[in-house]
Length: 531
Image (cartoon, rainbow, N blue to C red; front, side, top):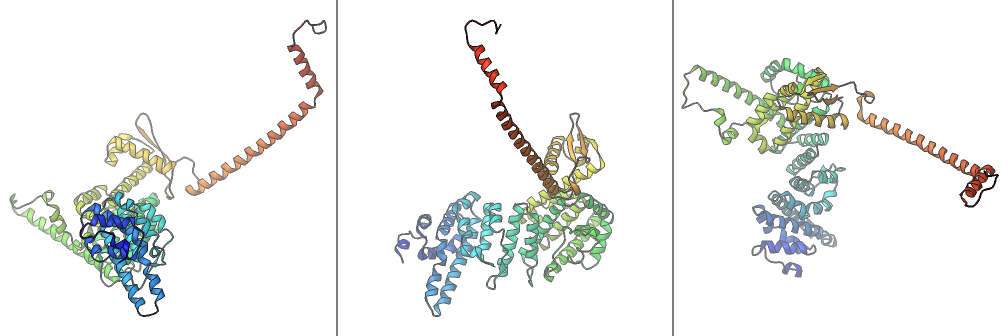
């Protein structure tokens, strides 16, 4: 054992002193080995957040030593090279697993201060063209630290392919975690791409990671509808409201296949006849096991709902027994969780159908009823964003119906109070009209008059084809042209002033006037000529 490792306190005797010493020593192979093995196993079960943060600091300092065995392996030309490589990979895997678990027990501030993110991003494994565990755990730690934009910048130009030595679990984790990072940045297209990739990984069994990716995918694709043209969305929404009940019965009567049924032109949740991709759209390469799982989940949920309706009808026909009947509001969260089948897939389907139909009452009822499930899945925030998107869509639809409406009436139609409605309109006026996004929807100018009337004005001049980007480019071109004209006028004025200076300096009359003015300022008697 080297001197640097010998002077480090034993982990079992003084864990904090051990990690503090490692965090201040230069990287070394012996110190790196101390972080693996028994130490890594103990850290997986450690509950002290401060000690976990110290472990992250020690790993961040000693992580460069994880590749020091490569030089020894290259210098030997025998069978020991493969053993050294396997031992190095095993130690790295043990430490990275412990890092992911330790970071989950630390506050965000301690993770960011530990330096583990910077150490992982400069590790050679994070720059490889093939997927490594370093890249997976970097996404995990960045997500736990809340450093979404930093992580998105680091992985911006990377799309690694899975290596033969990496497990399917790491592949699913990487694209799921990366999609969650893009969700944190509100980058819906990249999030959808990551979740689609996660669902397209070939497999023969259904993984909970794939179902988690599906749940987040359908919610993110709902949020993407906010960027679509609301007028087109309103058309197929009205059509869906008229045929929803009939479509649901037909879909449940047949074999339920999310790949085929959800992609059909009969469901507005998948885009309808407008050629738009709906929230329940799935990639074509989705494994059959996932399709069968969603099929079974929906069919079982539908049968369970019919059975519950039959039981409710039977109870209504029987005499009411107050001692036996239990109100639904009094059910415990544990009983609610036990009632879910197939990981609550049907709940997310109902949320999507309510979102597409614009049924805010049903959406809020589902959100309230299944709050525990949504929080356990980590999707409660996405559901709240979908709720906000439904309000925005409803405001736009009302603006197409009313040019002028009282603020109180608008608040009543939105089922909101007056003050929150006023704040919402001011926010929409700022985001949608003053700083428009790349949405295809042309929002009206929203003005709130002093008498409490709200004015929606669609007649405001806009860029050609309602394209904000083209409008900004045209505005930039006009500003550039005006600037060039002003510069030319300024240059011409400068030349004119120079010519005027020359003509004045060479004018005899000007010099005579100057001498006369100077003589007039002098004192003394004046002659008859001057009088």
